[in-house]
Image 1 (tube, rainbow, N blue to C red):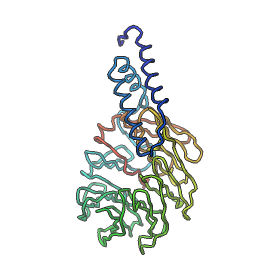
Image 2 (spheres, rainbow, N blue to C red):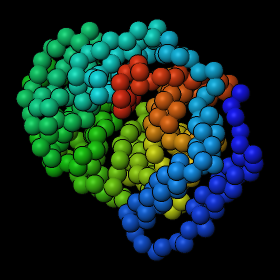
Image 3 (tube, one colour):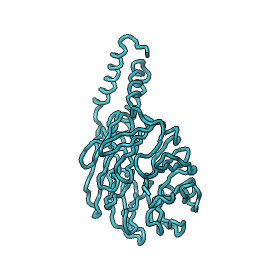
Image 4 (cartoon, rainbow, N blue to C red):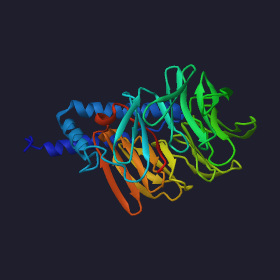
Length: 364
């Protein structure tokens, strides 16, 4: 049994009250958000440091740490809860994870993406775009300066890969031929629209998005964001998700906003994604020392947790959400209906530091 000093519990409560009250009563400052967010983050870091430096504070942090994470989580990723396979990148390299839990380290690549049917993988390293098979065998390479964020589209016999290099959006055929530049682009992963026609969305600048016909170069839509865009995704019905921490928007094919989320100064969104092939968007909302997963349309909460939930990925069939929880060193699988939660511990030990889910693809 752990020794408790006299009146230690009361000291814990007083320390927690001081930290939470200081955060709640901070004076609002009418500065641009780009100034406010670093100051709030700095205040939170200072509060945590102050908590650690005092004996009662160390007990508070210890109690918070015990509360983070899914209890009785699996000690390893023994299997995926639904058909499909995962691509994961980390400082160790790129991993392919099959439904039965078997993992293969494909090599030391920075970004990775599945081909449309999961038969191949496009990946990047220092000055190369690489096409691989699921065993890690290299099919072809293309030398380009600092390639990033490959995105693959098409059919099993006619595909295209979009990627960024040298500050430009480039397109190459799935066999590595016909590489060409389409235009200037910011460092945001491009996204292909599902269905016929090669329509792609990309960030021309940090705060502007272009929807383009990649075959003839016709600009179909220009969209503006009130802050830098972090992510672009399409639904199976052709809705476009433009994610930004304080200004997430969903656009229809005519460029009209059909859904939006403007978080407050005290909160922000960390990630968002369409749920399977539906038009419903799930998002991660960070508020204070906790995070929640909720539906943008209904506000329905799917999951709540202490600390940082950093990434959200939907299963191909839309039945499960996969959440990255670095504070707890866990992944959490959340089945939406009927609700079920499966935690997986020791993510860093299995995949390496800074593990990031690059895709959950294809049951076939």
